[in-house]
Image 1: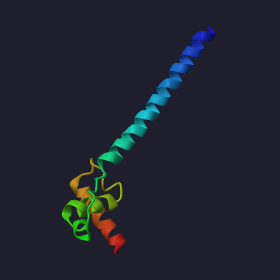
Image 2: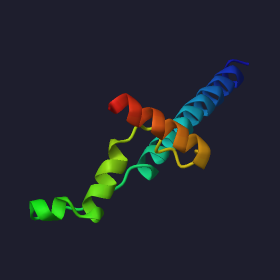
Image 3: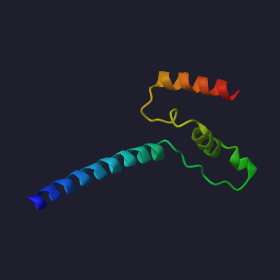
Length: 87
C-alpha cells in the first residue's frame, strides 16, 4: 500500500513539472519567434540600413505588439496607442 501511494505521488509530481516546463517553453518560443536578429554592421551607414534598423525597431516594440498571433486590426490600434504614448 505504501509503495502504491508513493508511485502515484511521484507520477503526479512528474505531471506537474512537465506541465510547468511546457508552459515555460511555450513562453520562451513565443519570445524567440517575436525577436529579430540585428545583423552586425561596420559603420554608422550600415546601422541606418533597413536590414539593421528594421529589426532594431521591431525589437524595441512592446512584447504584446510582437505577438505572432495578434490580428492586424489589434496590432494597428495597439501600435497607434504605443506611438502616442512615446511622443
